[in-house]
Length: 202
Image: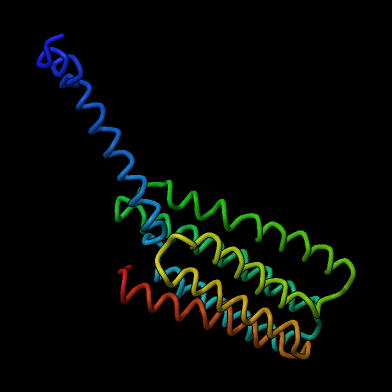
């Protein structure tokens, strides 16, 4: 067989080249999405969550009972979740970010939070309030660490910080619980919000 004819037979058609280029672009886009998975995290949202955490800590410190403190922190958790979801989606829309990175983060964050909710219910029914701060800090930290594993640095760092506070809460006196929650859900969120605003915008 003529070598030139053999080469021509193997040479891809323009349509095949277009399909190959389109597939390559799709893979590059998916890789970039994975690498910048959480640049759409709202720094302003993190700041608002931090302020909510500090407000909850202040109210809980003056609460007359452990049950009332639990109610205050659960309300703060609901408010913080609403703030975080809304702020992140608004920033993603402004930056024209795709939904895939946010969905990936949410799927990694949701299981620890669900486990935390179920364990909170069990401990509250047993009136075992002392272990709740460690539980919340540890599981929230796990969610941030796994969800932000392929994201910008502040997110996994935030998770590590929460887990460290959770470890302290396990060993510290129960009276430290509210202060440690303030340091985590208040202070760490404020620090992350400032860093994201400074380095990643919005």
